[in-house]
Image (cartoon, one colour):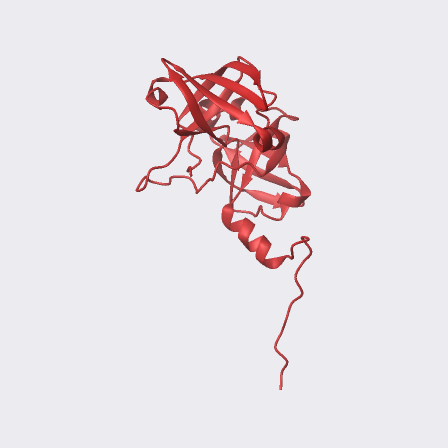
Length: 209
């Protein structure tokens, strides 16, 4: 479990095919160099397990569903990534609870300045649009954000200069694809209101006598 507050930026230094997946090597800054094999780290919002650690380099295996659901199959050496260690019991949650399980991909539709910040519009898959609401929470590449506006399959967030500088948001341009994780409570609410096929459940009212 994570909080969506990015601790550091890492750099991809290796992305090698392995049987059934890819071995990823990341160069990480000093605060993250104490991680040992078996530890969890969110890489662009995707929870991965450290399989090897030496000096300033951490290695991970990305396989199966992770490669199908995320962009980790296409990252290359030189790419920057958002990093966050998993929460410890009692740690402050300065963002919101983020599981590290990517729900799908969103795409940057627009980027524009305004009111001392930068506004980003994203388009999302129809299946996830119902889980995103104004003033609700969402994680984009692992960054905990508050939704400013939401309509149809599009939502808007406001990014302050600090976030632009300390995450990969500064690299985003229209057309950029990103990892999206909706709020875990929104998933349960939507599931409770729909059937297994996603269709709305019928509303049952008590018959008045």
